[in-house]
Image 1 (cartoon, rainbow, N blue to C red):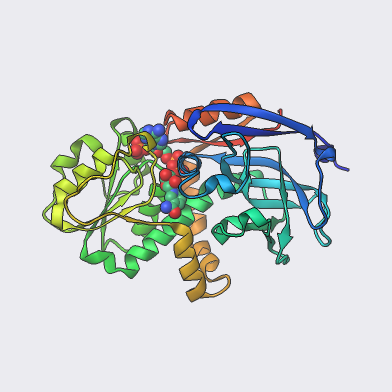
Image 2 (image 1 turned 135 degrees about the horizontal axis):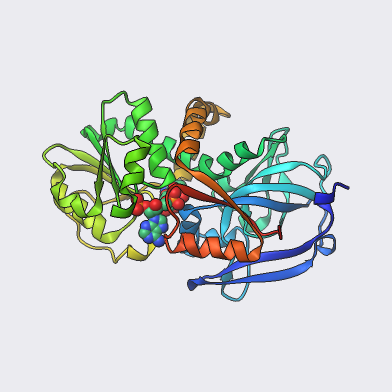
Length: 369
Ligand SMILES: NC(=O)c1ccc[n+]([C@@H]2O[C@H](COP(=O)([O-])OP(=O)(O)OC[C@H]3O[C@@H](n4cnc5c(N)ncnc54)[C@H](OP(=O)(O)O)[C@@H]3O)[C@@H](O)[C@H]2O)c1
């Protein structure tokens, strides 16, 4: 058995569902004592990305069932992350220990899954508690050994890049609702950067992309160079607003949204809510000038395009622009690796509080270094 696969003590990183700032690490049995039923695999979670996207999973843990993926107990939740795992033990014929797996994981050392629809490319976790959840999160990929830096890009950027791809695709399909400008909030987030990158690449200058960001992150967004214009939130009232615009709201900030709607009014051709990076500023629903914001949910759009484009159709299209985006992202963002329970807690609390500079991104492991 390779040294990396010797049994280790299992552990879960937990967040208090009612107060995400409260965390705990719960130790479990040694991994060779974790029970495995027939048909199950024990995955050893190796490394995972942690960004505002994962905070949003926790913020909507109850409302959108994100706590259901990896159940916990007593008011605690296991926050979902994207990452890589090694197959430690198998009670499922055809899947052998040592395989590397990519997919949706808990902030834990281990995860039990029940593979179904196994192919050379991957499998679906058919565990009963996940049956009603969006299929994209239940899909696991069998990966051959990738260079570490490519793994980092995959877990940090790929799910967010895929979301941005689907927004670009949706807006283009809707002819940008007749608008020639796209306003994107939380312009410094990876999702927004990917969207600006794709709009510039795919729409040949037919729309102008305006990045809205906080004052402290403005210089970073300008340096990235993928928006046509950059404005800080306090300058929304001075944006030129005589032409129709679309608003892609990644910040989910109530006062920012109200200002954008107020400034553009009926000239806001469409407004969609993608994220809530400013999760503490969501505010109560309120009367807004202009259109009612529509929720954009990537898994719904994946379902639609998968049906229309057939198996592999979405992946093939994603692949065309993935490599240039990953290269650009590597220039903008430094990946920071941290291991062990204390380091995971510190990074979690930093990202939760929005203190992580936009040019840094965490890849974490709960295992002791
Ligand atoms: N609807 C969907 O299907 C879907 C799919 C994927 C992602 N998303 C959402 O897209 C959003 C972006 O995720 P990401 O991982 O790309 O983000 P990220 O790269 O971690 O974003 C970091 C940026 O978000 C803002 N921010 C983060 N935390 C903050 C806080 N506590 N207070 C104030 N500002 C904060 C800051 O940007 P600014 O200063 O520029 O505001 C910061 O630079 C998330 O809400 C995620 O859930 C939605």
